[in-house]
Length: 372
Image (cartoon, rainbow, N blue to C red; front, side, top):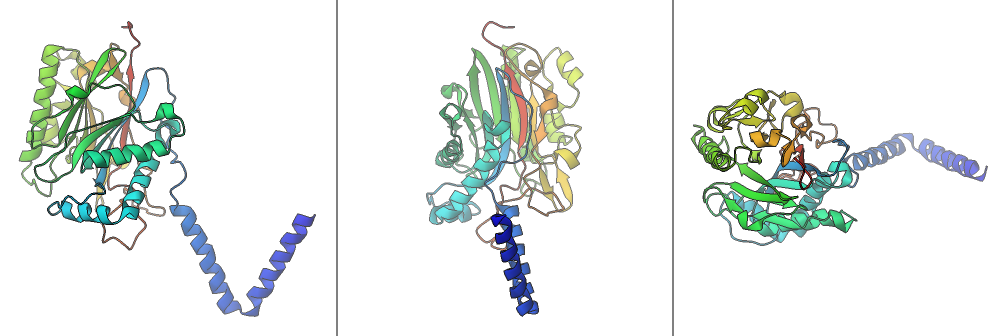
């Protein structure tokens, strides 16, 4: 009863205040209510509602994400266009902290709040930038057993300083980490679980803005496909997973004719030379699986591609039907449903989000030791 009486007294006082100057006080009240609503919509401390299915022993979640210009806290005197981000994050620790906070929040919310077991990111300036993201992730994980222990990266010194990196809590062979081509943003790493190897290739192909003839993206595809062919030549059932931002849709010639990636699973498994690759994003609707938005167009630029060995029951395998685009990372109230980007140092007119690309996830599995 006392609680109800107190509530009535507050309501009565609010009413008297409101009618004392209706025009002014109503405006104030509406302004306060709007502010509360905006704050509740844009806060970044609650889990993202993304459900990706149950876990089982040897069942892992892999995430590939273009994290949009993740630079570290050191000014390396980069040239344009890197200079803007290099200088900004080195002189504005709050901006860098916000960037890392948003990325880590989105990632840890995946996999039932555990974060992906393997994270392949692109547009990372340096090993230090990747390590800062790893540390931000670990700060959000109360269980030390879930902490990310390994960062794998080879910095790119040609062109833009934005390279792929892999952050994982799984065992790796760090000596196998290398770039495929010194001037290309393509990283090859090796995961080893239960004695089985998984070759992971993370790549970021040249933008369409600077490669209008498609030649450079085709070169990326050729390089990756040749590496895949070499691995399969040594072992026809080699487990290879290729992911990243291709800057081309799954039906582009660079992907179909140069990477030899198709949506036809039967053709991949039946290929006697094991040369065809399965593109999990091929044939998907951009309305549901689009990872980047330009104007009114949605594009599936971020893709996951598998070797034939990932489709059998030996060693590593993948469930093609588990592929998802995490398209919930949008600005509240944005009807275009485009990725909520973080932006640059000049973007002061909006609340900063995550990245200008959505993440892509898939479940992979490895057999127990001695199992077929």
